[in-house]
Length: 307
Image 1 (spheres, rainbow, N blue to C red):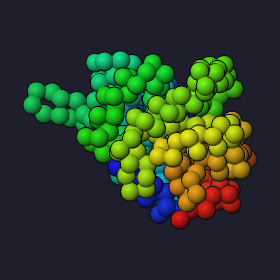
Image 2 (cartoon, rainbow, N blue to C red):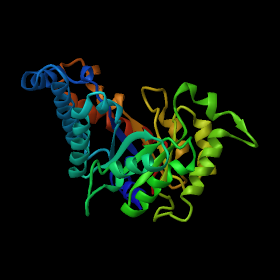
Image 3 (cartoon, helix red, strand yellow):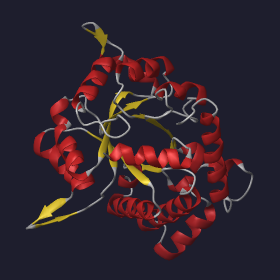
């Protein structure tokens, strides 16, 4: 199962964290931007090239520290087809460096549309008699609040291709409770979603006891994290909200099982933009990102003991 692969990479590096790759041009060091604009112009083509060069540098700096990266599709879509080409190239390069790739796409739709998303991001697209891999991520994030039928095409793709998926359950944003914490029957909506996710993966557990159907559970809600870990023993957690959004190492410890497994914590800006806090001109962006990733690893390691 795909989460077995992720868990093994986590154990190998003693690091249950994933680095988000969500760059805007203004977050990229000036020397990278200037070179891209000189060669490709100051429009979308130049911006996309700058993002690619920045991503490649980050991956080179982080590939022996973190087990995974998580490019967020919105930051690539905003640059049009050029940005999506950079996302595809980023996924390929991360794979070359041995990283697990979570495509943060948060798709959620029905029927043939959901199937098309599953083909593009996980399974591959059939043209004639051949099937061609497109983005070929190891894992995707999904919004299942339209119901379990929106997730089935992705689950089928996961089972057939040894992939995995994270479904939004309790998100890290301040307004999440407006709907997710509303009582529905004897439980809250986020708890019912968690139950659905746990049930959807039932019988598909891998070596470490986790199914390919994971859950997004925010670091900013430690009590809910604790509740969901007890409620969802066979569900792998993706934990956003660490760092810039306020989640701490102490908070995220509740996402892990008793063996220190079953979760991965995301940080994006605190790693990607670490160079902005060094007082330099951005030429040190790789060293800064690596140092931030190591600091995060060590902070979580003080609370989470693996093995």
